[in-house]
Image (cartoon, rainbow, N blue to C red; front, side, top):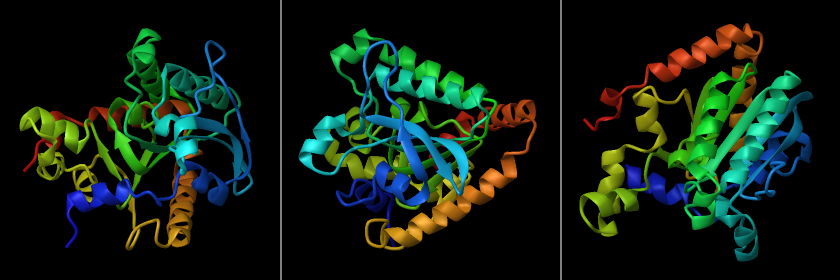
Length: 267
């Protein structure tokens, strides 16, 4: 029987499909858009226009990189403030042209460097959450690997939130939690069980909408996982795309408001 810690290990697997793998499999005509028009183009978070079954969409996700060189270029998927400001620019563009937004979450968290803090990391994350909360277009979120803290939540607010079976989503990493509670990261396995940060637990608590089965892991047989995810997103988009924009925002707000501290407490 798999444990929560097993999901943590699989979510971090070196061969697990990355954001651009999903883009290449699920979308066509992807045209990346760059920059926040203020400081720089953050390659930790990528986004652009694409087609999903022929329909124009805005696709955004954190890309961690595969090789050492690529990981450094993409800062291991940990975005700076300019990354989140790029996201805000892209989703506002999508809203202007009435294009659905699809995001893919895979990050340890926002980059915690001094420069990031000086340029307003917390404010950029907060602004991104606020913008996503009130977008008039459909928003579908899928957590494909790690969903770490505010860095994940910044692109994680949506009408539908999905998780791959072995992905994780939490306010803090197991190692970080263990270091706070037990003063040692060696208790990370215990912390992961207490946090209930895997897809099955979060689904049972009503914090996500769907779980995509992976079998032994998305890195073992990625194509069935891609096919299942595409079918799910197609179904969800058909469900929400014709809603009145105001009604869609109200439902999103009610969904967020239904989350409370009680459902987050371990049993």
